[in-house]
Image (cartoon, rainbow, N blue to C red; front, side, top):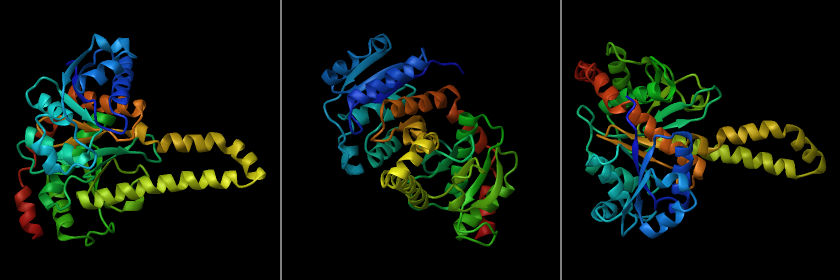
Length: 349
């Protein structure tokens, strides 16, 4: 499409606020000349942060916001004050068409609630989902959704998530027909809940979708890289994601501890250092930063609260890619092809 993305950045979210958000935007612009930014938040702090990045000045505007959404704010609280907070104002800029996407490192629940209310779901989508790219043993990451936006889902939601996840995978990886599977407690047809079986049936029956649907996968296969898109409800997805993140930390800490225990293992550490560095780099969340709310009338990307500038730049680039490659149009086109969904649902029941 080649439209120059203008992105709203909630400069106050995340552990370090303005300094990191501005530095991340600067890094993204260094790689992509065309990016334009609207920084939303405390004007004084944003100006201060911009001093370190003269290359950003020409490409940036500032929208002052009096308040911020705190890390522990309840979604209902965040909604009430959204007209005055940096997060609410950044999402509103997407709604009124001032920018093509918003990036925030703030509170996920609040961002979801504000985005949902302001942007509403696309026609044909009942609920938005939180999708992210997770590292695998292969060269490309796996798209996984929903990672926590909806604790309870029905078959229709899962089918819609599959369509959205496939569109996201096509943009991020350039696959014509991404391989899609539903997360389940076994790969046999009879395994899992009626909801999962109903979704599988509908996806098997849907014709002409831009995906290759192949049934079920289990949680120990998330990181193998054999599947392009893994679809699940937000409850299981969030648990799986936290288990993966915890295991990654556990393994790296274990390695560090064992290498520090004796002189011999210190020598071993030096020899194996390229391998452990590769592991660390591969598992570094900053290289996979930027979860996306799919299914809304607008692009909103959630950056990790603890992301460094490299991570923020990554989240900004994800937002820009989705705008440039028209994610909303792609999802709409695919949704139009799922006519007989209701039929499959009835059959499953």
